[in-house]
Length: 135
Image 1: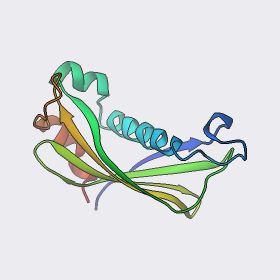
Image 2: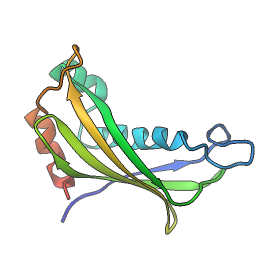
Image 3: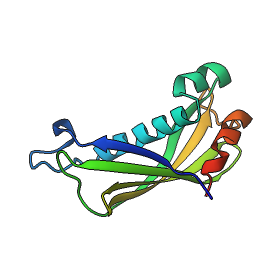
Image 4: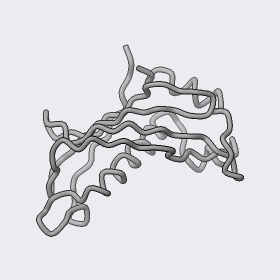
């Protein structure tokens, strides 16, 4: 059975528009925070990946399907798991929900690059730590 990364957030005033609805671009921030916490769950950080492996993880593409709105002071849960990978990239599925309501579904392709912005092979240590989270 695959594991799922879960991250909880609360919607703050700064996340919303004048009507108290989460501004659409802020969902990208929520997804990024969840991916950062997922790295932490496997014992790594973006800084460690840069220092130890000389790599950065960047978003190559992101496809978001907006289902419903989130509002000021909502408590949201972000679930993330890995759909597939290649030598240099990972395709991740992320979902933001409020209780049983799905707010968004997102497919995010992440690529490992070096300091010259060239794709590099995903370090084996990272792949092995992520293995339980593959669908």
